[in-house]
Image (tube, rainbow over all chains, first blue to last red; front, side, top):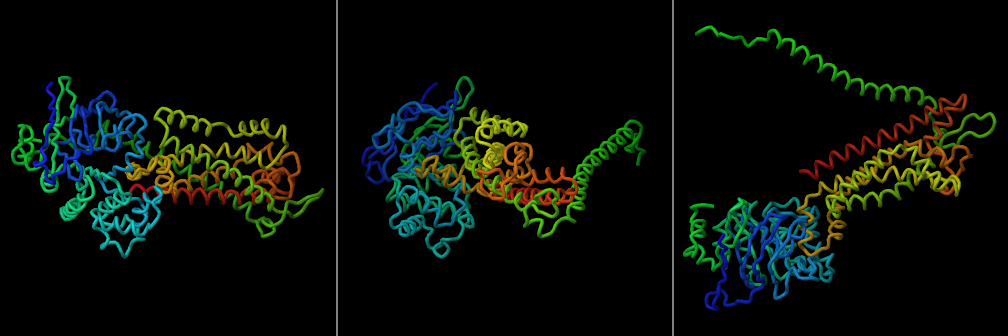
Length: 277
Length: 292
């Protein structure tokens, strides 16, 4: 079985912003659920203040991989990780590393909007209150809602239930909730897959704005979306082992433009041109 | 058009199968009607016998005392029941909710299964056994008290509250837990701030059902809180107190006081029916709200 190890040396000039500080460094990261390997030996560097998209067919381990980045995989009792995953130089799965502290710095927005059944204000204030960031609570909530491009739509009804918002507004509220606690990285797991095109476009615009302050990793089914928003794109593929089990591998990782116009790997080319997947 | 060579009408064996089908349907309907009519007959007979003895005095006066008692009411039985069931609820509610949180959010699947089984078995213990147990542990050394009765009722209530609460905790979508955990909130804080508030309605209705059940219990209280000694005419939980069920028992044995027994039975039955029906309705609405 051939494993693709895409170790790309990105020259300074090739990076869209000229920065190349790697926030995440994955080295031979494999994830198992019980005996079943979900992703096999992923090697990738994710760069600071860029948007990195993860694309690939269903079941290729995109969601599994993004969930390893803030240790949400811990919530699955049978999940196990091998290899090394460093976050700003620290081994995320090393001894003494507290998953709660990890998630405090690396926020996540999920596929389906999941606001709490509380008011709009309390949704954003929730994390702030519990994490002890109670000073200037009103300002922090307002700032987060501004950053999530939601303030103008909700400023007159902050006390209303968040469940009364539209799907797109709920998702932006979830983004506001995530950035309110001032994380360093935002992980987005198919954030627009449950939204209509207009709401999707609002989320994409928002990501462009957030890029100035945050490192963003987004899993998406939608290749156009990746092409529109991402600086870097990782293509995950499916590998069928001789025993017949399916596992995800990182096929190719490069600048988004390169992935979509001139991919190095035949499988990437087939996927992005819609020949299979 | 050609004549059909077969018939789609009933005939022979099919006719017999249809007869059996109708017969079994009718039997099942009859069984269901029987269950409903038993409830109706009990309610009507208790009501018709009890209502005549109901008046304000019955609720506001104490039990008749003395050699040839007349009059008297169930005030202290009501007070006693409220005190005993109230203390039992204070003991059982936090314990039951904590157990439910453990089973639904913290325990490994294996330990959760074992705990659930233990709760179900406890729920199945005949309540008189619990009464004897508390008698040996508490009453034998400290004498009868309302508190001993509360302890017995709490043992009965814990599995009811724990199981009802666990059921609604599991209804809280996992996406809510994830939302909180992804903010860097600890597991326990997530349970406390997100899961339990969402499940609050269900916890309260589950507790109400347990209260209704406990208020109607007689067997575990028999030797714990008043029978055999004279019940105190106060509300101190350290004294033996009268309860509704024991009042019914005692009135019924007292010649000439059957009507009061019926009236007390009617009062208790109304309380239990209304609370459990109300709790079930609230639970159904709540389940819909969480599910949709």
